[in-house]
Image (cartoon, rainbow, N blue to C red; front, side, top):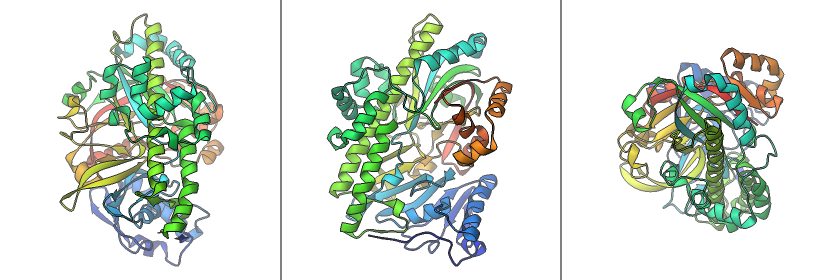
Length: 512
């Protein structure tokens, strides 16, 4: 196994910048030679405002060296050097430096090539971290007087924070069934409605999941955490519609008017997914040595898709993805219970249907056109969201004419968006778009720069109720720690890789 360590090189910032050119509205190309062994170009989507952050990272790298940190544009290019990659290594507008792959990176690998790889760094540690939007038939006027009580009710119903334990009874047998069946397990156990499944990516179940490929240590971490929100950037928010940009598409989703109340749930596979990723990275380093796979960065540990290690990772990753769907479904059950109690009604009478559920840390086998020919690809999306266009067979009947709903969660106290997939996105990005705002400050820097009370005061001024398990997290996840989600979404809209549909603003935030 061989890799080149990214350190401060001989090239100046100006020389490095010469490898990057503007090739369209909000679209930049990274040319061959930017890093060694590029097999395809790099592409990233940023507007003028977001471009500054990308180039500042690169300038710092050129003048000060890496210090273990590789800028996102270098990571995009490093991914472009991996065996079997096709099209381009792509960065969405919320791109920022991550483990191996940048967060916001999309890369597809040709399943028909023997040397094509799968990389856990292209999925992330929180496998199938994703977002779910639940609508209601309530309006803001219905909750305005009880906003604080409603926030507290959600906080009481949903276990949150580091080490939180779920209230959904789970045995070892239950866990294995959930890992294999995904949302079908929730349906069997009475935690889901039949129509919930229709409005989940992959119908809430990866069919190649194999619980036997998930380690006992991962399962031990997963049993107590089912139905928990977790910590970090995960949240449940009560939101109201602020703007509708595409009324016909919004109506198809049951998003009918300004002020309509919705709930957004952002969570993933918790400690189980993290352990699956950790276990796989150790095995893949050995596979790389055996198969003589060379990479530019050791964090790009990978294995050939058709190798035992590659197949085992995909089976374990799919099981972790199923766990994440069951996790979000369990919290949906708890949210429905909380609202029903608060309004002395039933979830059905409150029209608490799922609009959609999307993944933004996953690798999936999909068919796309490459150079005009259909190919079966393993598409890695890390901090990026699937955004299939209209008439795609894998999106629900309800959304065949609108394109797939794409849920873009904002940061604590900022707006979120519903987008729709486009045909241009299918052609340019393998049907992918952004996933959120993207960090601009490290968690440590956020804690040093911001105070707990400042953040709380800012939320109070906006009329937002908050319940949080850890005060430290309030600083880490403050809006100032992230890029502007509106800039990110507008870039995707301008580039044509997804289309704005609805804007929501938070009125209550529940965090770990």
